[in-house]
Length: 256
Image 1 (cartoon, rainbow, N blue to C red):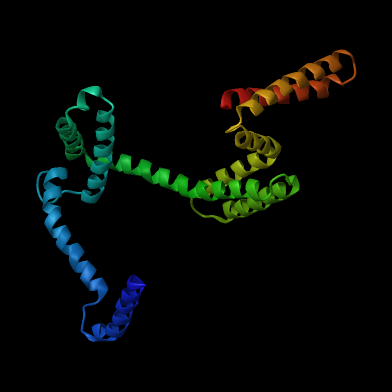
Image 2: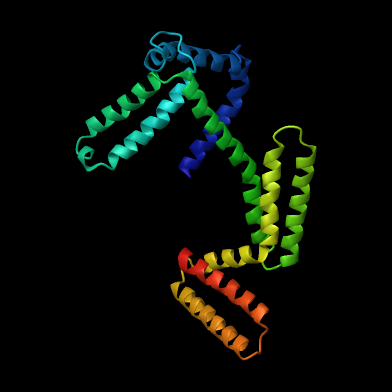
């Protein structure tokens, strides 16, 4: 009770004092933040320009070089941590992790930097394009479940939207096209995808169920083969069914 009372008094005091505090002529928040950022840039820019630039205070692509340095430093540090020699000598590990990226970035030409940044730009575009597809994919198979008609209608709506975007886009229309192609593949292989997702969910923690299903698939293949030989099942449909079961058996065996 005492802590609750103290907390309430503090909140009440802040509420009563807030109008008086706001009455003072405080600088705008944006101006204060810009002032802090400018000060930090003025302090660190000469240092990073010398370390990562071209040896003077006019290094180009400074911020991009700094980000690349951080990335390389983290990678080199982790890689050296896997080498037994550097496990006992952490100071050498830190030194090498600093020197290797500095030497590489300091003398790297701007043309090479542009190539590197272009690759990251492409990666960002690809991820940003396919993230909606991935979200929709898992939403559809989670929400629709065993309702095949709903799943297929969902894919048809998705395909229709991306076909419209692809046909009306003036730039970067290829991304819409490939997303449409991916959705079309999912529509055509809807039943196989559902079966694979259910298998993944089922066998994560149940190894015995996997072994039982593999044995059941082998029994089905054997029975269909015998029915084809005895003329009970038409050869064409039987072989198609066997091929489908063999693919599913191969998937389960390799995946789990």
